[in-house]
Image 1 (cartoon, rainbow, N blue to C red):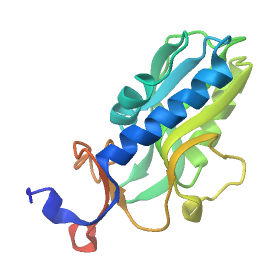
Image 2 (cartoon, rainbow, N blue to C red; image 1 turned 135 degrees about the vertical axis):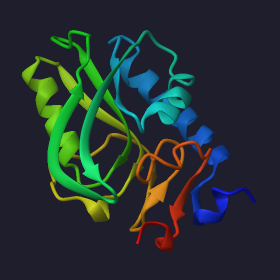
Image 3 (cartoon, rainbow, N blue to C red; image 1 turned 60 degrees about the horizontal axis):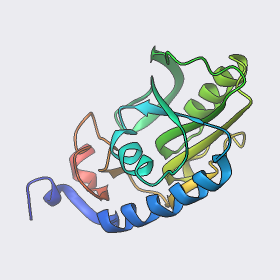
Length: 181
């Protein structure tokens, strides 16, 4: 057991299961978008491992871009969404798939979806590594493509962080409470 592994209470999603679920999602996205040339927009920084795995399994023309937004401080969402890096790709009359590590409160994704609608996207869907409905504060956000639905608990790994740490775990686990309390 490594140093970072010792900070994890239990594993929620193993690396092998992540790869398998990304394969399944990639097939669904391929089927849904084979004639649409979607733009996958990753929300930095947490999306990077998930997006890197997911795109390996999408077999259609697609583009990628990145958006950096902030709404978290420590373990809780502030509800205030700030765009710190906008996309360069024009989304007008295009299909957008937002790639996110976790859908929790929904505040960030609601604002990002509104931004893409304002910019003229034909459609906007969400692909998420994790969906955490117990944390949802808005019913306006429902991810279409989800690897795993989880319950309460503070998760880290495979892009998910606690104060910028633990993103490099190759699995998702529940962080021990003593680490962040």
